[in-house]
Structure formats: structure tokens, C-alpha cells
Image 1 (tube, rainbow over the protein chains, first blue to last red):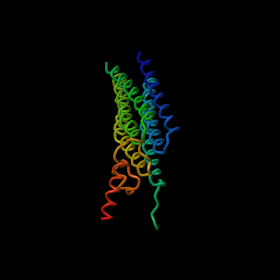
Image 2 (image 1 turned 135 degrees about the horizontal axis):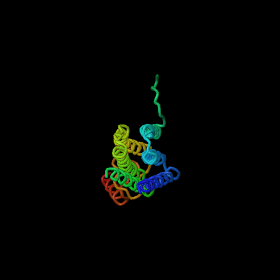
Image 3 (image 1 turned 60 degrees about the horizontal axis):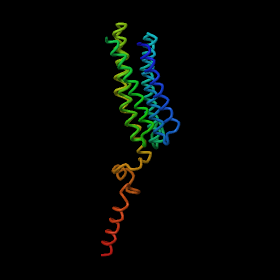
Length: 94
Length: 135
């Protein structure tokens, strides 16, 4: 019973990830795609938590932190690229 | 008992995540999609990680500090990411959806050209200005 509920939750997260993937592919502008990618990363994070409950290990819990940090930094880089056209700014006129 | 609370929290988070994804697909605009993607998705992930924390605590007696760190990190960073994407979208001139109301920031950032004022009001104001100039 417990495992059935966990697998249903995992399936719901997969449905959410595929709906976000639709927005990544179709999305009319670049910020749409960036925010859908951020949401995909965050949904993967909770899917990893469910998988680690199903397999009864605690080895995957570091991956949650790493994936959260990567999703955040990726979104920041995307937004800065969309806004300024450059990720790492160099000094103007030396 | 606490295990079941954790599992029901995980199910609640999954349902909330699907609702957030439906909002991300169906809403008409970047700025409205940001609501669906940042707020409800953050709540879904936080509830799901809290459920996993409760399950590990009750089932294995293992208090996982990393899950608490993950909850705090998601709570801090996900709304910031949504706000930054929304700001970048406005500054790179992504248009608003049709039928959205007044847009005051456009006058401040880009000047007054092609404002969202309804056509009738604009024509009336122009006629008034011409009359004043002629007088």
C-alpha cells in the first residue's frame, strides 16, 4: 500500500515534468523556456527524494542539494544572459 | 502513524506539482506563468521533501540534516529565480498577454511609445491638445 502511493506520486511527478517539457519545446519566448527548465530541475529534486524512500537508502540525499544548487545557478545564468546578452561582464574601457 | 503523514504529504506535493504544471501550460503569458512556476511548485517541492524527512525519521530513526538544508535552500532560491526570470523577460521586451490592464513600468523604462491606453481616450486627448495649440 505504501509503495503503491509512492509510485503514484512518482508517476504524477513524471506527468508534471512532461507538461513542463511541452512548455520548454513550444514556449514562444526564451524566459518561458528558462522558467520551465527551472521547474523541471525542482521536480527532479523531489522525484529523487521519493526514489530514495522506495529504495530505502540515504545515499541520494546529497544529490538533492547538488541538483538544487545547479538548478538555481543555471536559472540565474539564463536570466542574466537574456537580460544583458552576456553572462560574465568584463570591465568597460579596461 | 508519522510514516503515513509523510507519505500523504508526498502525495499532496505530487498533486500540487501537477496543478502547477497545468498552470504553466495553460496560462497565456510569461508573467502569469511565473506565478504558477514559482509559488505552487516551490510549495510542492517543500511539502514533498518534508514528507521524505518525516518518513526517514519515523521509519529508520534517521534525522537527515541534508533534507532540512534542501528545504531551506529551495524556500530561499526558487522565488528569487522566478523574480529574476520575470525581470529579464520584461527588460527584453516580451509582450504582455492581450487584455492585460495598465502598464506603468513601460513609460518609465522604454518611454511612452505604443502605450496600452484604449484608442478612444487617446484620440480625445489628441483632439484636446490640437484645440489648445490652435487657440
